Length: 154
Image 1 (tube, rainbow, N blue to C red):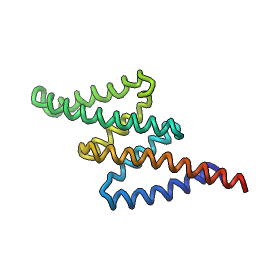
Image 2 (image 1 turned 90 degrees about the vertical axis):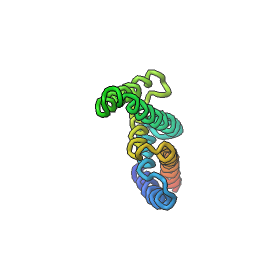
Image 3 (image 1 turned 120 degrees about the vertical axis):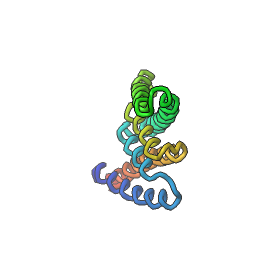
Image 4 (image 1 turned 90 degrees about the horizontal axis):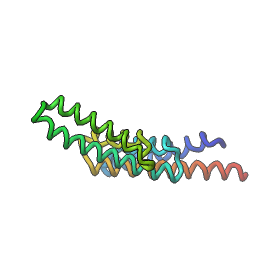
């Protein structure tokens, strides 16, 4: 069995379970899928898990800072311009932080920030969903590797 076939099976099963569980428990379903994608985009394995968790969380922090900055700037320079300036500074910051090696996965930060914005600024909801997705990514990869190894052993 190819890895692609095995990961398709494991992701399919876990994605269905995640959707049902997240809806049942009021978790942010899409945040889990965003972080799951981040896990694989970061290269998977333990490093992909670590990178996704750190960078997705950093993005939520950036999103929070953007909202704070927009609130401070809005009354001074107008809401639209204030929001635009806050987003510009936050987006630049998410790129600039990549100078630090362990903050170098820029897409992970943007995914976390996007999740925060898309949850209507629900910090806890975004973070919990992102954590669940990264862990599900790790589990789905481990399941796929185990299926592949079992198939090879036959």
